[in-house]
Image 1 (cartoon, rainbow, N blue to C red):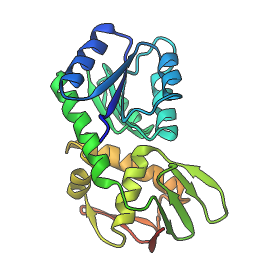
Image 2 (image 1 turned 180 degrees about the vertical axis):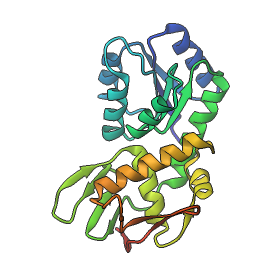
Image 3 (image 1 turned 90 degrees about the vertical axis):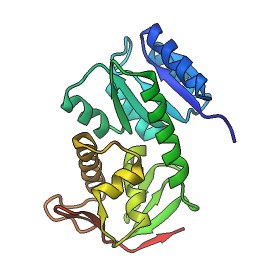
Amino acid sequence: MNTPLIAILDDEPQIRQMLSDALQDAGFRTATFGRATEFEAALARTAPDVCLVDLGLPDKDGLALVHRLALESGASIIIISGRAQVQDRVTGLELGADDYIIKPFEPAEVVARVRARLRKGRDSAPATSSAQFQGWTAHFDRYLLVAPDGREVPFSHAEGEVLRLFLDQPKRLISRVQMQEALGGVAGESFDRAMDVRISRLRTKLGEDPKNPTLIKTIYGAGYIFLGDVNWL
């Protein structure tokens, strides 16, 4: 098995070095970048397994970069930022990040979060990469939904994790606790808000009526049920 590659994008050299040292000591390969342009150029040549991204970048908007990564990259995305407001965390998760760590942090925590993301990716990989439901086709290898009328709708890595969870267990109640265990998140308000955001975005992409969704139903106080018939290809 190839050693996972962790890409670190932060404009502070000390933080880049601290993270790189901690991750290498834990057995990972690392690549560090101080500017978004260098980071994007490297991504055109190689594909990291996890990207650690600071939002306060000198040359590009960090949130816009996260959103683009979520749509175009198969890597897990962990934001590392000094922005500690709940709305900042929600926005980052809404735009496609898988996790959000607030500065200052302990390097050991970052290593643990990286391991959790990699473990989640291995555990959740299906034998097949495409599924059909209600006229839609989801291609998880390309992060793409194809609508009944042929329209192509991209989805993020984070949205894909939730969609895959639903498609693996159609017509079964999935509780918040089960989602947390399956997706490797940290239980609490931030995780619940992140799930609400991802499910809301999935409903929008699937053309659901937000007031009366027919595919992803909320069972208040219990969890969610995906009501479509699913055929893995």
